[in-house]
Image 1 (tube, rainbow, N blue to C red):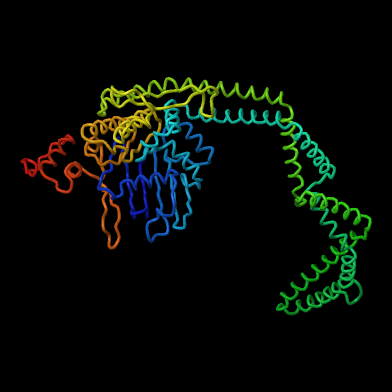
Image 2: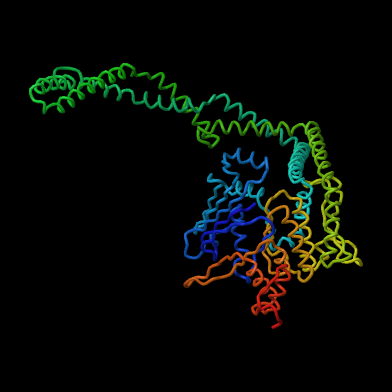
Length: 562
């Protein structure tokens, strides 16, 4: 579950440190006070999209941290171990920083993370249902994804999509082989000739570097020999040679230093210089012994370099890229050879189709009972959401050949009342009906989710009265098994919560910031009364609020009618 949320300089929030409880909690307050901003900040911490506009005006960056209790998931623990993320005290701390320039950085338990990693770990921790989630249910892809998640088949659905793509790739290769055999043969012959030409060169990038170094040395051999001989003479030949002069000078200072200790430093420096000059002389003589004029070897190297550069120039690549070019050609030739045998490709295609259909059949076997179960659950929920006699059905319509999503199309159909036939969800419901059906679907599918924290951001828009109370009870029922957070404007929903926060705008100098207050029993009565009666709170609305909360209120203000 979510334990803490720390927010710095995010939109109109300057600094908030929030500690969350388990069960069903609601965030209430006036429109524009920043309720959804808190959930947006949480969404940022679990890898949601953002831009520099979330940084509070005049600040350098926004900083959001969310601390979660580690859920009992072996898969999540294994993922953390694979990513080298330490798990201390069964806590996961997700942090996200957005700079004013737009740059984004993220960490998981102090380890730098990519946004993809942040989203991946976030999927195990929190499930956010946004304000427009109902409208997403009108899309066929959203309906299919939701059913697969409800069936526990999301992983298998992804596998089916991969297998379908593999099958279609082989089918396309087979069609190309059948349609363009002559052109493919010419292309194969050309590639084979080019590969043979480059292979004959026997080019090795490591040898190429050494070859260029040897060529440079041989090309300048005369100058190197002349310079080495001259320097050897200066260092070691004759009475005026540098090594001899340094040795004699060092001996003279050695004798003087025996008399005057003040020359000790000079003695050491000269002795070191004499030793280093003598070592340089011996090293230079060894170098000179290895130097030789070898015109034949130089010609051989020049020819080799010319062959390599000519071929590289022919194919318009640097010499170092010839091995990569050869690998590309070999891969392309292998593909063309594969395409050149339609019968072999047809056999591979048939095998790929068989594997796809087997996986797709397993997916169908998971979808069918999940579709029946979800149809019955949402239909039952509709009866309590002012849609008595209405019905909901998840229809699986078989496809002749299947596609990347399986062997059937998924469609949500609904009848808002008994006199209507079942028709596609997108073509039937009004805005209010869509809100109620969408909420029922979200609550039912979330009930089966293993995600420990569920968040509903104003998903109760478009409902009210007794329906709102039923929605509140549905969310409270979810809160018995996991943490549920809900942003709401409805008093009936808020009254069902285990705990409640009020979010309000507050003036701070010339700035307007968002402030959060934990509400005790008295505070909840006042807030529910405000939600019921607007700006003017009367003893009646306070008493009504206390009754909704199931609290006995002894305030004399509420003992009589206004």
